[in-house]
Length: 117
Image (cartoon, rainbow, N blue to C red; front, side, top):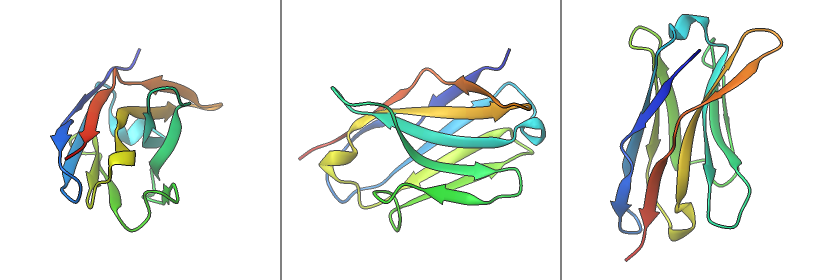
């Protein structure tokens, strides 16, 4: 079993920044891909950004140019730096880890991000 614990959510005004972090109970060197997804009220969960074990990144169009994903395998963490936040970024953000082959998905409990004036 793998536990993922997110932190760093909160309330900010439009244009401000937040940094989310996720700590894995599993050695990150053994995790294929780590990433962030989000789910707004009434909407399906959607990809925000992912990063592979060789640090290849992938971003949703809505995140490109504003968000940056990173991982530190020595600390078993994945982080998401979110800049120039918009009200439409308001959602619960979930940490995800894909482990093994075929990969199994593991999820954190989610952290709320609210962007409003």
